[in-house]
Amino acid sequence: MAYNPSSSLEMVLSTVRCYRDLTRIRRDSLDVLNSFTALRPISSPPPPQTNMGTGQTPLLTFNGTIPIVYQGNRYNIPLRIWVPDSY
Image (cartoon, rainbow, N blue to C red):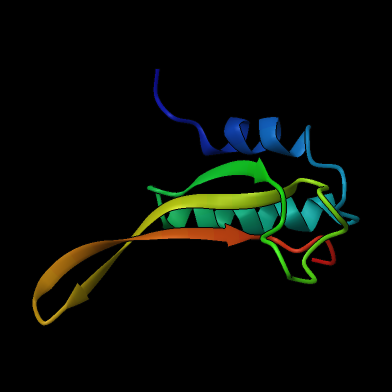
């Protein structure tokens, strides 16, 4: 079965309930997932010692790699992006 960014995102958003503007979250998240196909949406607690969320409330997180080219070589850089609850 092929990966479907929209259904994966909906599964995560059904478990993450801290965002006020779900229309914006969906639109912007799908833009990210369609632009960087190696990223996957997950839910995870905010990183420690940040103001990204309240306690251990799970946040929408993008986890995976993004490609970059440096001096003619392609690298896949590991990346985790937390979307703050105030987004």
